[in-house]
Amino acid sequence: MMDLKKTSLGIELGSTRIKAVLIDENHIPVASGGFEWENQLVDGVWTYAMDAVHEGVQACFAALRADVKAKLGVELTTVGAIGVSAMMHGYLPFDRDGKQLAEFRTWRNTITGEAAAELTERFGFNIPQRWSIAHLYQAILNGETHVGDIAQLTTLAGYIHWRLTGEKVMGVGEASGMFPIDSAKLDYDEAMVEKFDALVAPKGYSWKLRDILPKVLSAGESAGTLTADGARFLDPTGTLLPGIPLAPCEGDAGTGMAATNSVRVGTGNVSAGTSDFAMLVTDKKLRVHREIDMVTTPDGFPVAMVHCNNCTSDINAWVNLFAELAALIGADADRGALFTKLFRAALDGDPDCGGLLSYNYFSGEGVTDLDEGRPVFARTPDAKFTLANFMRTHLLSALATLKIGLDILTGEERVKIDKLYGHGGFFKTPEVGQRMLSAAVGAPVSVMETAGEGGPYGMALLGAYMLWRDPGESLPDYLDRRVFADAKSTTLMADEADAAGFNAFLARYKKALALERAAVEVL
Image (cartoon, rainbow, N blue to C red; front, top):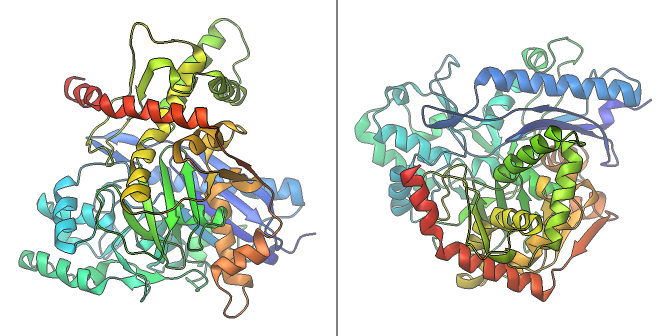
């Protein structure tokens, strides 16, 4: 019989799946649960309905509770700690009575260009379009009447944490996607806070910025306990008991860093799923680049982040089409097996994809300065139009925008990439995603055995760190010594032909970007 108080639970609301992972005191996953969902484009805004958020979280927890019962033979009445993470950034405003004032505006939106540009200029610090402060200021510029009633501004992770604990707090990594962080003070940058308050003072709002932003906490700090209302929210059956401590909520970038042991200065990782982003932990001050975000690790160290809104959505759409074809001819259409076969087919393609080209832009893309997206596949009449080249084209397209951003870090900022850890669905098929990413960055790529557990596993580790760390033990030391000392991983380095092929593909990709811009205009 497992002592449930010697476990840690991580719950992450990802772009296409809500997932829960329970780990034991040896940091090994012992049970999990999940719920599939998808965002919607409503009146030009990428969003999730709050009813879907509630339904998804509860269904995910119910699936976890059933898995615990099946695998461990016990009812899930308690755990040692809970941590919540979710898609970073976005906009969720509430009034003093807890009423939601506007639709949840997700990271995928590119509707805050005016605000982001003005704040970047005023702060001397890059403010991406998806950050909460950009959404807030754009709502002000738009004259949206709800702004004056805001009493709380948060993110999806912050919202769920608040529902579970009643606490308006947030981990520093997640907070760094709301407003710039001073890593020395582990708090919002006070000089920038004052600049923002001065900027909006003529509007006469009753609030100042710190009144509505969550309190910032660092990894390891207590972020409240599960209330009776919170327990009923998570588990309407009443089986889960209140009183469980919660770790500071985090964004999916922070949990990805924890899950891949990439929180120490000099380490880096790439998360690749619906979106993809590279995180390089640095102690070096960088110049302002529109393509580079400066966020933090869960313990507050600066991170240079290249975030791309689009990664695997177009691949998923093509695989669904092939699944329809398989069903039409009476063949086995198991999607998991189909993904594996198609990904592996890409290994047989020409290194430069044989002259094929695609843009995977379902939505706008900040790195290439596009406010909207249109998925495009193109080829010349003499291109080598084979299935292998077709699939390789879409895999390289999924990484192309990321590579454009990384080239700024490695070229202009001289940031060195010795090795990257990969996690997310793009790396699920062994070797394929690793090899493609290695070809893109010119460095080895490692994938751990636990990479498939992803963000919720990383959040569970942050809960474990809060529970079981020694006094004074840093998060990097805890992960090195206790979690990943004997971790199994595979490391691949692309050969010269693959690297040269990716560069040739990228040159063609950048030269033809006008094609994507034209598609946005005419379609």
